[in-house]
Length: 94
Image (cartoon, rainbow, N blue to C red; front, side, top):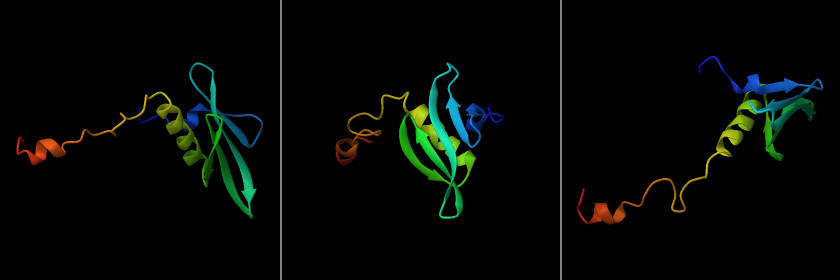
């Protein structure tokens, strides 16, 4: 899906505020363009929580979309993503 980008899920209304909308119509984040100390910045809110600031609309939408995708995961197993192989490696079984 090289032709799709998270920005395509962004709907601008009112001007300067983009709302990220899932295929089922749920809103899952917002981006607001603001001035911070004379610089233009984008305030990122993902899943109802402030998720930082970015310098481009593209990176703001990516940050929100990554949080949205991650929210569908049960998360890593309690011990982490990778199993502990120390016992196997130290026993010479590999």
